Image (tube, rainbow, N blue to C red; front, side, top):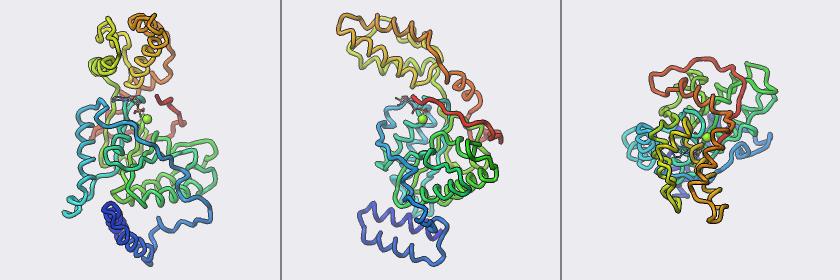
Length: 336
Ligand SMILES: Nc1ncnc2c1ncn2[C@@H]1O[C@H](COP(=O)(O)OP(=O)(O)O)[C@@H](O)[C@H]1O
Ligand SMILES: [Mg+2]
């Protein structure tokens, strides 16, 4: 408790460019005799915690996204709580900082997380599971500890994509006891994180998350696939930037695309533009569109079934209670 309060103060002071004070707090904190678990890392086993993180430059702004109303409002609140964290703190409150995003691939989970980092002007850290999951007993926890030790040194947005991948059986780790230790260690770390680290976890399979995991998140947001009207609005926005408007009405294009994610609709539009551009004036936008619509109907869509399934299975509302099962084989979903 003392530790997280001091850390919050430190971040505050750094934000105000009071580095001397922040450094003094840092020294005082490291001198606290009862060292909390997060500071007991031995650096002997290598790495400074950054190896399991990639820093990504946010490309998306929240305003660029078409979001369901509750998601937009929650996003706005989240940003406000962090921008005005000092006001909250003066009244004994902390900004919420554990966010769960759920929904089928390609509908804005990653983009939303980036948008939050962009809006708060914070570094956007993406967790790399390949560098996190170790095959020796205790190795994953040691790496997790280093990771959390690193991120708590400064305000940031920490993004766990495919969050359900953690705690599932994988290649070398056959020991379920080890998996349980990893999950409970992760939960403990999440609980102990100072509020200036915004943890955003995304999953295509909210139903696979354990109840204990689910409870940890203060905000749970659903990113469903768009309905027909939303696809039309999205297409309209894209086509508005084309040099020429196609003759086919947007409604008809949307109808021909059928059930799509935003990412797929965007891909489709970009392909039409590619044809059009490479046509060097000899190809009308309508012909480029017709060609791509033909190809569209014959495409392979491996994630299509998954998208439909998760849509039925993942209504993220506060009262929804996910199933406890967590024993499905890890699956990777091609991201757009
Ligand atoms: N809600 C949305 N509004 C606008 N564009 C979107 C939306 N969702 C996805 N996209 C587009 O699709 C791309 C991939 O989406 P992404 O955020 O990676 O989806 P997810 O993480 O849910 O799989 C984004 O870069 C963006 O261009
Ligand atoms: Mg994503």
